[in-house]
Length: 327
View (cartoon, rainbow, N blue to C red):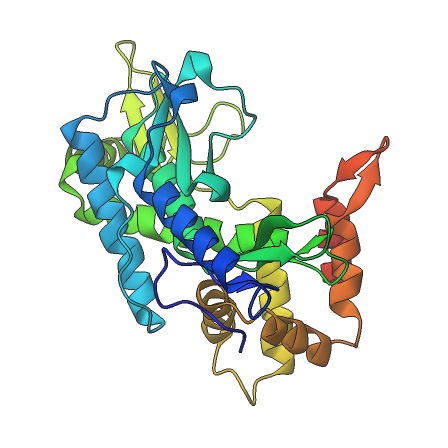
């Protein structure tokens, strides 16, 4: 297994050991300062002041994600509220609703107007899982010395030093874990009690209601939120699998079917991926996939994540999904 840090604030730095001890110490010191100092001038006036309820969400998310870390033998790692920046919607310039900024050891979240509590919690949980996964840096020696991200969870810089592998599988695992933790929160967290009670009542009183667009039942096991307006119209939301999660589930099933001597069930396969996401050691996943199918399978998968479209980098998730189906 690759070297990992038991102190999550100190990321391993690949390529610097024995090269320049003074530089390594300075980088580690600066990274610690980045973690502790979250006073960014560019965010002045752009952040939502955190409420008591925001703090309760962050505390709950820290406890839930720490429980996951302990399952895989890792210590607790509490991310301070100051490292989670809730940005006002009018200042949000990104396509995604939230992201973990490894460079600044910070989580950025769009605190959009009208966002429902469980979805805001989901954004916090999702990015916390990235933050609490294995993180390492890559130091490039020579005249052009650079410090870049090497690994966040399974998302890893490949041997070519310019391409990442397992980005889609890493996201799929995070999505799967986030949905599970959101579901737990719905039944446990006091700040979601009113939402849960309203959902249960609407589900009970409208069990036969259908979605006017799809014709399917409005409520199912994946429904996590519902609200009735003054006209008696019910809006509901449910957890749905992304293409990445669908692809990961297919891969997991194929690995399990071909390795029943090693795994008792599919959950054990998922746990193997999750363990490596927290610990590092991505080469173990490369070996698992290549040994299960054929040597070079991971290289073939990598090409979809590093393809081009109209001269621009393109993550061909649909193509990768079809490839996994055909394995």
